[in-house]
Image (cartoon, rainbow, N blue to C red; front, side, top):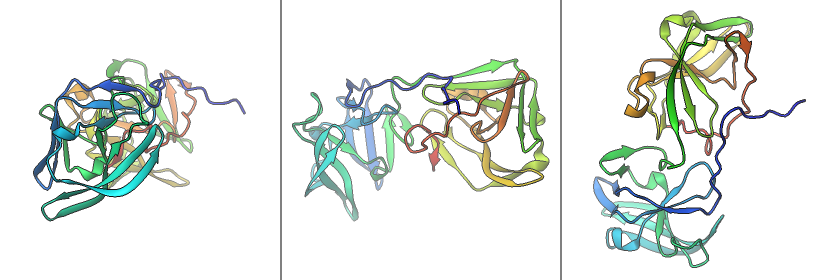
Length: 267
């Protein structure tokens, strides 16, 4: 079998890379401020996206309790901390980087994303994980036709699409709803979020003559302003369908590791 060769740019940031964050970063838990800094740094624990590193001086006094445990992480060791704020206690919420870590982050603190209820870059809330400064997301109108099939059934047949090209991910083709066979689509309760596109407004399973496939398509009715052209359009996971572009069957992308490479996560 011929190995799959991605037809999109892959992530190239090396593990352990450190850069300054040119944005004010704030975090809140239980509706109270936990951190507020203009001196954060990025560090990459994997190529997909970075972590924030926050100076201790820019974290609310008394909210971090050293658990006396050392963590061995990919770029060095760190001391694990509990977040305690009023009646709120979250163990393993943060870790302070030790001296064997890359230059510039020793003594700073990184937080488990879910330990902070709301993250902000300047005055805009950020979801799922920090936005990588090396990730580009473009929404381009394309007049190339798109046909989506599965088990021989035509799910969509569109004369054009809005292509979303995102670093490290397969191209997604967002289609006008009038070109989709809705008799085969069943809405589900799934909701996912993306730091670059926002929160989904709908997911659909697909039923063919032979089987039912869960959560095969989705839409963003209210995407972030960077990708507003996809508002209300529907995309299919091209890893799981047969997608024809201008009549030519496209190779299915390799399955993407959702937790690292795919930015859609349960909301």
